[in-house]
Amino acid sequence: MNKTFWNERYQANETTYGIEPNDFFKSQLDQLTPGKLLLPAEGEGRNALYAARQGWQVTAYDFSEVARIKTLQQALHLNLLNIEYHVQDLSQIELPENTFDAIGIIFVHLPESIRKHLHGTCVQSLRPGGRIILEVFSKSQLQYNSGGPKDYDLLSSLEILQQDFAPLTMNLMEERLIELSEGFFHSGPAHVVRMVATKDSQPK
Image 1 (cartoon, rainbow, N blue to C red):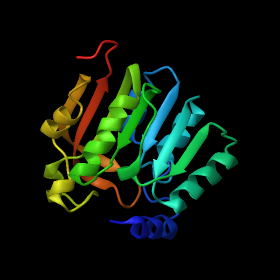
Image 2: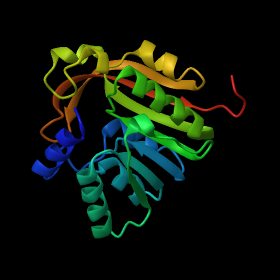
Image 3: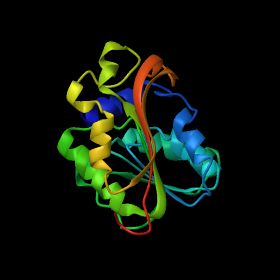
Image 4: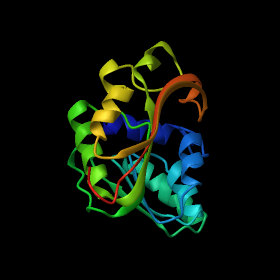
């Protein structure tokens, strides 16, 4: 799925994945003290807007110009000035080290080489004590029609995440069936992998 696909999808739908933040992301973020938050592949901004309302300084990335425009228009409407949104191909993303207090990776599905690059730079950009909150579709999602790519190689597993985020301490790792209600494209029973991981003050 390329930039044209996503620009057209975001343009054609008022809210592609609803207006509320992802449930898992919200439940985990609400446990943290607001600071600097990174959201790669943020789309139309439902998670960014929620976090900004809670006082987080949000840095978001996506390669869809339409998604950026829609997010910033809504931020302006809500008088939220604490969202910085970049249009960027995630295969080229380079992040400052030891910067973010939290990172939300929500339904980001990428080819292996790009996924490893993104996850690696996210680990480096997390400050000591910072936390990554992740929810993605598992490889078992192929049997469901509630969203996600229909490509087995783009789906995830506990083993993949354990390898990609090996430098971090795992606070939560689970694979489970949930009920999605995030707009037309994320609706119904879904099989997901969830992870919460913390960067230690001393490297492993």
